[in-house]
Amino acid sequence: MTVPRIQLNDGHSIPQLGFGVFKVDPNETERIVTDALEVGYRHLDTARIYGNEAGVGRAIAASGIAREQLYVTTKLWNDDQGTQSVHDAFDASLERLGLDYVDLYLIHWPSPARDRYVDTWREFEKLRDSGRVRSIGVSNFLVPHLERLLDETDVVPAVDQIELHPAHQQPATAAFAEEHGIAIEAWGPLGQGKYPLFELPEIAGPAATHEKTPAQVVVRWHLQRGHIVFPKSTRRERMAENFDVFDFELDDAEMQAITALEREGRVSAHPDEVD
Ligand code: NAD
Picture 1 (tube, helix red, strand yellow):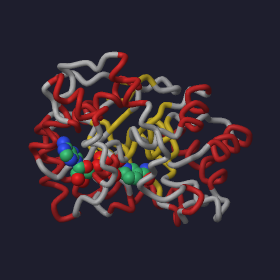
Picture 2: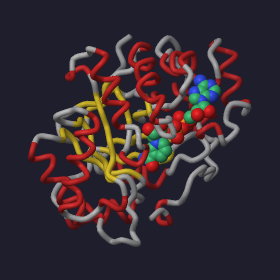
Picture 3: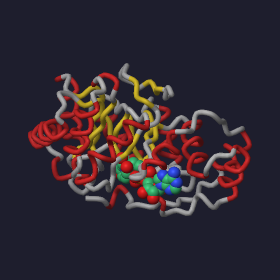
Picture 4: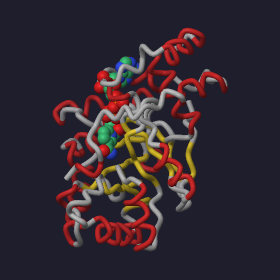
């Protein structure tokens, strides 16, 4: 199974479908990531705050998969924003992962109350120059945060990782990102299981038509919209299900009906309120 790659604005590319480990118990992470790698995932999305970078690193080391075949993202937590603290936090993440570079490093939240994300981004530019990070990006940045980075710094983020699923598509942020060549990564792509997407006829209908599951329809919708996506499951059969989305295609009418589900159905906090 060859997962398509999305070209980033810095010359690198990223597998469009990956595996996320938010809320994966650190004690179970090695086993769960090992399952994901065996299923075929090669793109892993973790963060310092998830507390499971070390488990991700152990699974990578045990897999025997060549480093260049893997794509690894981690994220800087809010209280590490600043100048030297960025480098200290990055060094610690790299050490826990047992890697000598990460493919993508993200500012996890803008945390505007701290007013440090511009300074932090300048340090990210240095990390990228050091070669220990291939691509740098942001997460949960809305248009005002992106505008400020573009105005005050030199490097356009490669990605913005935002909450995005059919009921919360963040059209303003997505349009701004597209205009500026910033790829969109959709977190909570299945509505985190909190938003009842799977029962909606716009999703259940195509699932029946294509003999796929509602979750597969939602993942497929993301892929056809051009999002980078990394659904999470701790259950191997669901990992396999979420990966088995390359043998069918939603037609234009099905895509439009799902896209029309947009309704500000945010399942997590507003980025301006996360500190
Ligand atoms: P998700 O939308 O991927 O939902 C995961 C939940 O959906 C699972 O816990 C399970 O309950 C359900 N599920 C998964 N596969 C299913 C299937 N095939 N059938 C039925 N139910 C299924 O939510 P997520 O984990 O929050 O998002 C994915 C990844 O995005 C995370 O693991 C993490 O890597 C990233 N993320 C980033 C941020 C951020 O602030 N940058 C925030 C949250 C998540």
